[in-house]
Image (tube, rainbow, N blue to C red; front, side, top):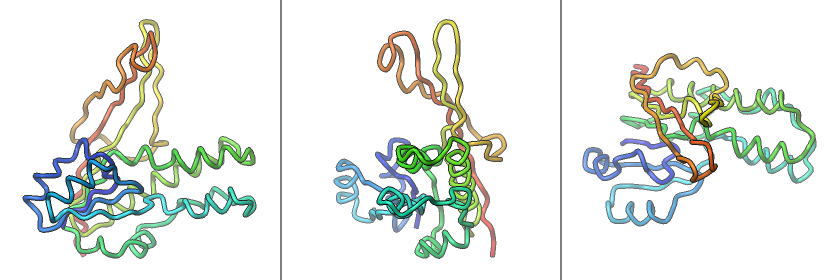
Length: 210
């Protein structure tokens, strides 16, 4: 079985090739687009799983419903064992792929908690760092090989200046095996005088033999 965590639109995932190679393909995400649902139905051995890869959205919803102020420094810090208990069916995987989801994991929790007005930037960044580090630790914990596709930098590029943001909050990933540039929104698609670039990296982690 191959597992694709954060499958989304499967834009960088050769779904048909995976379906032909593995007995089972499990796509895991919070939402599965209609196009992917239809393709999965045609392939037969592709299964869809709705799952919150952050593990904290119910707690965030509780905060929005007036559940009180939460200590963000402890949220999102779940270790690999806790994540494995939450999603035990992945223990039988032969390959796990995290597909362009790592940099996205903190965005929804941070946005929703920021809107409450009761958390400062430092607290929200700590939460984001915990989520990124937890996801990487989870990937590294599998007994099978795992692959990580992730944005490394977001760049806003004009004729005069390049503004660079690192969405991984200093995660110790090292150098990727492959790196490429994705010009996600050339001018003037998003801005009249700026290109929006993503620098993407691919990492392969060896199996953690039990």
